[in-house]
Amino acid sequence: MLSKPLVFLRDDDVWRLDASFKRFFSLALELRIPVVYGVVPGCLTRGAQKFLVERVRRTPELVDLVQHGWRHHNYALPGERKYEFGACRDSAAQRSDLRAGRRKMRACFGPYATDAFVPPYHSFNGDTLDILEDEGFSIFSAERELRPKGRLFLDLPANVALKTLDDGVIMALDAGSMIRRTLHSIAHRKVTGLVLHHNLYVSSQGRRDLEIFLRFLVNARKNGQIQIKLFSELLNMAGSCEK
Ligand SMILES: [Zn+2]
Image (cartoon, rainbow, N blue to C red):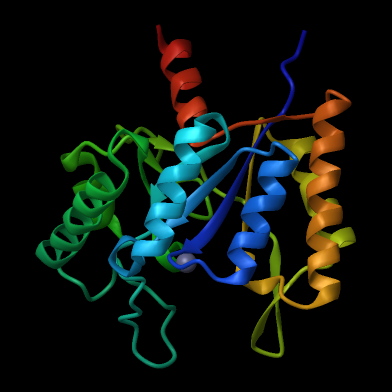
């Protein structure tokens, strides 16, 4: 029998306890949807740290905390694609920021930090990947699969962006579009990576769309169409396949 398509849901830009984050976190918890939170370690507030530690202790099966860059700084010049890692940042500067972020994740979350790196703006270069390998990171997640394959870490691309650009402004997708993109991906891939930004769902319509979409995921799981997994679970699954 073919195994069910695997899905992960990544929520990026987690660093403070604002209303949109608390709302998203509570809803995902209530619906028992596991979520990979991309934490910006260099900006993490004390309040957000305490909140996450408390919650992950209670429900570790529903929360992965992963490193989303260092400070989410944009070093790009006007007109360039945004990046914190890559392009004009030399290898030593990248390594220093990667290490600082990892140290902070470990200091803040101890055993609850999942050893994964999610580059801000999906941007990186060959140096970034070499350093991640060298430092022994377990998981990497940008937008697309890495080519060539064969890196020492597990590559888990978040191929479905649940947002769009409208006249240069980043907007959340409506529920129908989020569902369509997800269905299209699960029909074609073994692992579908969904990435959203809780801070885009602030209007009442946006909040409704997000809830409809999360309930769609719950139903798809209930109907046996998908399995929703954390990075840490996918890493264990990949490890057991190799044996
Ligand atoms: Zn980000």
